[in-house]
Length: 223
Image (cartoon, rainbow, N blue to C red; front, side, top):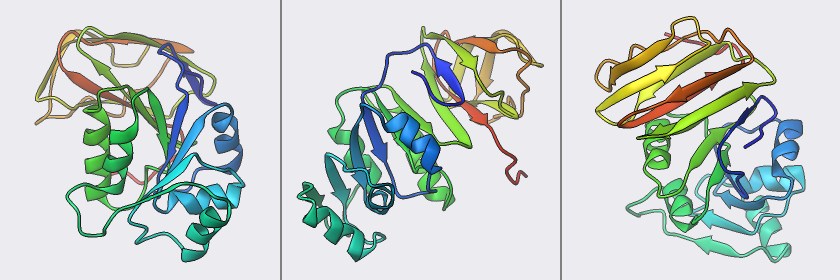
């Protein structure tokens, strides 16, 4: 999967979900949107309108989307899957449930912590592979038995390993300042953060568990 910042040696994604979080950079978005089936989630329809991108479908309760953007979709005859505001699942979770093939999701960062928490874990537990990305941040998942190589076109300022399962064992990563060899990481002590990439490529593998790999490409406020 090739992104403007890096290339991950996983399957090429043909589906793109644009959610209603932080607006992705226009140039970055246009680069990744080529040859993708695009699905807009709630306020993501505003970004599609502003970028002049026609999604295959828009999904959500539209409590945060501008009415003018929803009307734009209606005028363009874009299918709308409307859900009630009072429901058991988030708009993003509903969109993910429709995706049967690997997908990239953008417009996913920024905003409230509870939404970010839900998004990270919901994407991790999808039946298909999901990558969360914009021009500033990327998250992808390495699961039991997986081994991925990442080639960087732009080095991140930080790399973090975030256990999604309670325990991630057999974690190995090279070409970083603090390399790991068959390490065990625990969800209740997520200390493998703010590592530094020291090469144009890295390789990471996990024996058992689900690990989120996080890259930061711009200076963000940190604790």
